[in-house]
Amino acid sequence: MGGPDTLEDVPAFLYNLFSDRDIIKLGPALLQKPLARLISRRRAAKSKAIYSKIGGGSPLLKITTDQAQELQKRLSATHDCEVDVAMRYWQPRADEALQKLCNRDIDILVALPLYPHYTKATSGSSLKDLRSVHKQLVPDIPLVEIPSWPTQEKYLQALAAKIRQGARKFGDESFQLVYSAHSLPVTFIQEGDPYVEELKKTIQGLEGITGIQGQLCYQSRSGPVEWLSPSTSETIEALGSEGCKNILMVPVSFVSDHVETLYEINMLFRDKAADLGMRLYSTESLNSDPLFIDGLRDLVVATLEQQ
Image 1 (cartoon, one colour):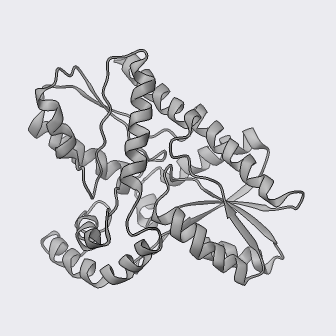
Image 2 (cartoon, rainbow, N blue to C red; image 1 turned 180 degrees about the horizontal axis):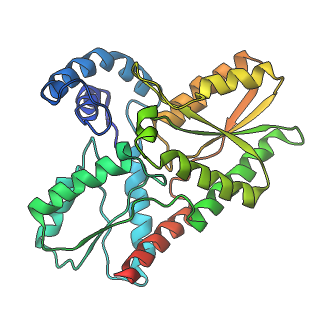
């Protein structure tokens, strides 16, 4: 999705986000952008306060650029390739990324969303935007897409390693494993979105590797519609009432540190658990984990070999 680089970028980032009807429909299409501007202005102060707690902006661009550079190193060992970054709601946008290709001798484009699980609100919107820009700027270069990768072997292995590492923080004490994913309106799933099923595939794969059973919940809901449940806050409260003392939280739908991991999980949810007499630790995000980057390389190579 991208994120604001500075606090001054927050209103414009929020406007870009709420302008996208694939992520939220704000009344009739004609009113989408006016309402997006109104909402972004109203939410800017609260969002700025949150981003100020994690360093005054989102670290997503730096982390994603590092991921791209590491991926290019691995791909370049066997393929003549370049890896660029495109964000959905902040710079560099898809048009900026593809504009670089206009004067290059490129044979094929591979779109690799950094969302393991497909939903039209994330991968769907990003790929739709990319296709539109591709058609305008470089229509003669073939574009192939990797829609999702919930069971990619090295992705699962990297996550499992983070779970084992996190479990050691509790020593010999028992803990509850909780998978926290970004929430979605229930209507998305009712309309056939595969997001929840793909999350379950990832969790099933992880449980097969680690032997640890966990439970799934959802964070980052906003607005008056019905969202996926249970929420992460509700799950923490329920575990507290059951006498749980330790929670290991896995940000399962995120592959990079950003506001949902740095603020919501490691501050907001950690403090909520502490207030209920529990310790809550989060597994480390994948970021540029070598095994994870190897998995991304395997995805790209497999896609190229199919062409």
